Image 1 (tube, rainbow, N blue to C red):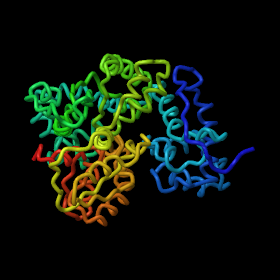
Image 2: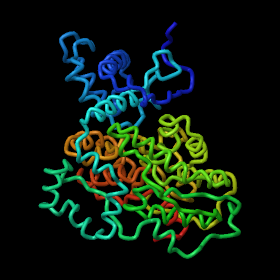
Image 3: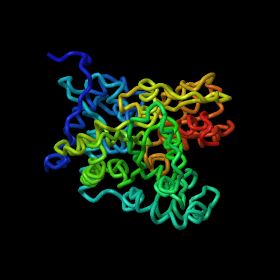
Image 4: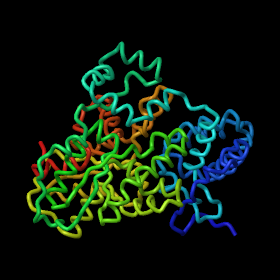
Amino acid sequence: MAKEGSLGAPTRHALAWRDAAFYDMDAIDAELTRVFDICHGCRRCFNLCDAFPKLFDMIDESDTLEVDGLDPKTDYKPVVDACTLCDMCFMTKCPYVPPHEFDLDFPHLMLRHRAAEHRQGATPRATTELAKTDRNGRVAKPIAPLANLMSATSNVAARAVMEMTLGVARDAELPRYHGVTLINRAEQRDPARDADGPAKDRKAVVYATCFANYNQPRTGEAALAVLDKLGVETTTLHPACCGMPQLEHGDIAAVAARAEQVAAVFEPYVDAGHEVVALTASCGLMLKCEWPLIVPENAAVKKLAAATRDINQYVVELAKTHELPDGLSPVAGGLAVHMACHARAQNMGPKAAEMLRLIPDTEVAVIERCSGHGGTFGVMTATREMAVKVAKPAVRAFKKTGAEQLCSDCPLACKHLAQEIENAGEPRPASKHPIEIFAEAYGLMS
């Protein structure tokens, strides 16, 4: 007998992406109809991403006021396109996720639809090229100043061309590139590990991630400095991107190949007792949660998932197990921590806020509203307006905190929110990764 809600912890099925039936659009439309009808009868997710308001508005404006009043061939795609794959409906709102017999996994159904479209060749070329983050980073590295000049919002002519050719909104701030990557910096830095630190017996491999490696190496430098302070023996690696950009547009085969490639590189370290530390929430989510569902038969991927920690999670774990060295100084002006959806989806709690609350005499507020930015969602013309709209509650929440600094597990979300706070007429806050603020509080960075 069906029960309202679910008392069991949510579980997820492995993705059957190798089966031809996975890409059958008629079967997908039938499943979308089933799921949308359940969502329509519940509506607990109305205040998450724009996918649900779009769906409910279409139903309410249909002739039947039910899902059967929609046309699957024309009305379903706008809902699919509005999903950012943030997993918040699955993790925090939906009472019908497995093991409930309704067996509802909205984000992975949206992914299945995108995978079918991708197999049909519907993914725009610009999208696939922008998703090649490692390739783009390598190309931009030797010409980083020029690349940054061309992509700056102040470069009106260049951004107009990017908008026309790539579909990148001209007003969206883009990540900057660096000529000296995180891997370069890790190789060149002087050893600074405290051999007598409280966690001197721990060993960790820092997964540089494409974003920290090419776009924001300061995050990785901060992580390494903090782990040095704690005595952790570290190695920094970047075999390849985690594949989140490919997952966004449904290229699951590419994600599977990336998972197998990266896991193979990390396996000897995991076998030797190293923990793996991810520097961004999206990458942590991929390694811990998505890869094991895409290649569940791969033993190296399973081991890597079990060994992976988010950097904030890892510091909190070390603090609880070994205690922290003295020397943390208060942060004036207060901190607002945007809890990124991909951090929440890891089901580990608000580790960024928990870590920053270890800093004495520092006000820490938490923002648990979507930033509106997921991967390229906040920068593409097709979704830019929607991203700005979804960010408004988070912007209002930041203003209420009165904090002078903004941070997030997701650097893209942080940049997007900082820009929208400024666009709302407020002073633009300093925006950083939480580990950068923690390193500054230790006096390890300025």
